Length: 420
Image 1 (cartoon, rainbow, N blue to C red):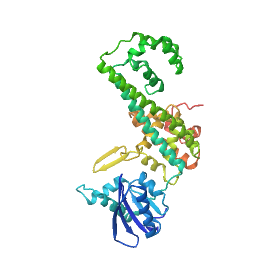
Image 2: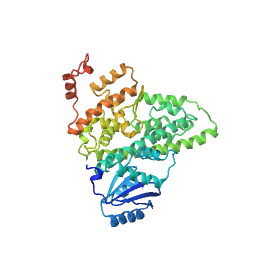
Image 3: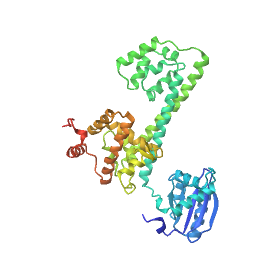
Image 4: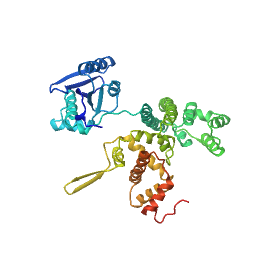
């Protein structure tokens, strides 16, 4: 892409966004005077302001703002005459501190600082280039699904905590507490007294209806139910806890249903994208992680100039700080956490599904690394492989990679018997 200074923009705009209104700083390309204003975050106001700028200056108009997605970005992207330049919020904050050591912050000033950064350091910023609608849909779906999984975990934990206060036996009867089976059981028998009144045939029919047909497991549960004694019979504890459990079960059930819908939509959208086959065939990727890996790389192959950029962007590559005789290596604090989580979770899945990955993990553990450090190191190596496959549109081949390691005389394969 050509440098910003080589692009014939008619005007430059800095925006400091907010939920209800946005502060604006405007400068014409052929002038030095700056204008300040404010627009409400309403469709009509934004449309009137944008079209007014177009009538006044023509196109294109450069816009600097401190985010790459969000309501204001979505609103401005529909205008062809705007070219958006995202600025990292931390970059803007550090730039502000350089001129405001006191830490004072003012929205109109931030809009002007965003404009300054765009004008004075154009080589630092690239225009926002949205990916295809399918890819953007997939990216939003996998992120929102992960948020629902977090909700599921929170509801399940709160449910367990409430059951421990009056009905702990239910936790002993079920190992998995975030399932429809558990929800249905508690909905039907929310107290120990209720389940003890149930007939044996009723309980057996319930388990059979939920695809639980292990006779030994069912018998163990029934025996435990008949022998169970209440933790407490105090109505001041049982009655409110029972209602709380039913409320949490309803919430957990709704989240489980929503996750199922997201899974089906993610599978349908991912299969329409041309690069999906590259990630679907990866060891340990599966239905959940393959779409997430695809979303992490995207479809714009000029976005990263090398595997090292992916490693840094994702937060997998460590950071080294030096000052005098001191040297400190730590992991990256500023990175898209969901992307880092995606690579780490997938790398952990490959330990038992890829020969060299398992060998490398065990090698790192033998050196004294913790599980998490060893998995991040494995993810670091995997990114280099994935980047090459992604760039060349070549599916990963475990046999070919092992042959390459053997030809290079990799110490990873020494004294190890390769799979036939």
